[in-house]
Amino acid sequence: MPETTPARTALPVLPALSAQAECLIERGVHEIAGLPAAELRTFAEASAGRDGALLAVHPGQAPASALAPLLRHDGKPGFVVTDMTDVDLFAPLGTVVLPNAPLYLLIGLDRGDRMANWSPNEALPALTAEARTPLLLTEGIHWVLQQPAVLERSHCFMTIGSRLRKANGALDARTPAIWISNGTGRDGRERGNAPKVGWCWAGNRHTWLGFASATGRRVLWSRDHMAGRRLRSQMIEPRSGHPCGACW
Image 1 (cartoon, helix red, strand yellow):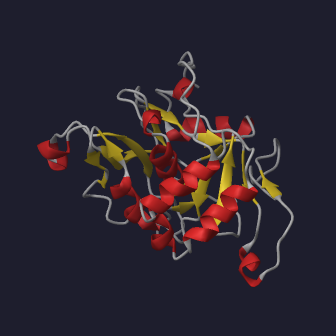
Image 2: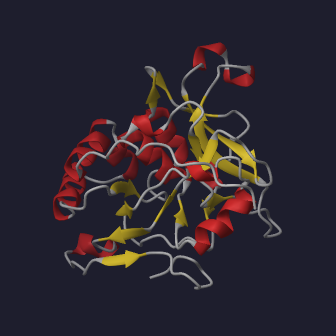
C-alpha cells in the first residue's frame, strides 16, 4: 500500500440544508428529478440541524450527464469528457447501498486527500476497512455544486462508488473522477479551468486525485412518503467487518 499523504487544511463548511435546497432549485435540479420544489424545501426543513450533511438527489432521478453542466469554476460550466458517453451507465458498486428515496443526506464527507497517489484498486479496500463508503459520481457533483471550493487545482477527487459493469459481469477498468480541465486535447482551449467529469484507470495512481467518501447515507422518508406515509429516519452506513461494507 502506498504512503499516506499529509492531510490538507479543513475544507469549507457546507451551507445549511435549507440553502442547499434553494441552490438545487435555482439550478433546476428538482425539474430534472421530476420533484416539486416544495419537496426539497420540506426535506431540508425536516433535516435541519445536521451540520455538515450534503443533500443529494437519487442518481436514478438526476443522472450525472444532466448535473455536470450545472457545475461552475472560474465562471465556466462543467462538462463530461467526450469519451464517456456512457457516463449514466456507471452504477453503485455492490458495496454501496442507496436509500430507496428520491432525496437523502450524506454524512461525514471527506475528499480523501491523504490517499492522493493511490490507485482506486488500493483505495477501495482501505476505505471499507475504515468503515467509510465511497461517493458516487452524482454525489461528488452534488458536493461541488454546493461547495465549489471543494474542487481545487491539484486537489480534486475520484468517485469510485460508481462503476460500469461489462456484459460479462466484470467491472469496466474506468473509474469516474471530477477535476479541473487544463483546456488541452479534446477538452478544447475554451474549457480551460472548467469543472470536468472524466475517468481514470482503476489501477493507476494520480498525485492530484483523492478519493471522496462519507461515513453514511441518511434517509428520512422512503418513496412511500409521497403517499403520505412518513417513516422513521434510517441510517445507511458502512460497518466494519460486514461483507457489503454499507448496509441498512
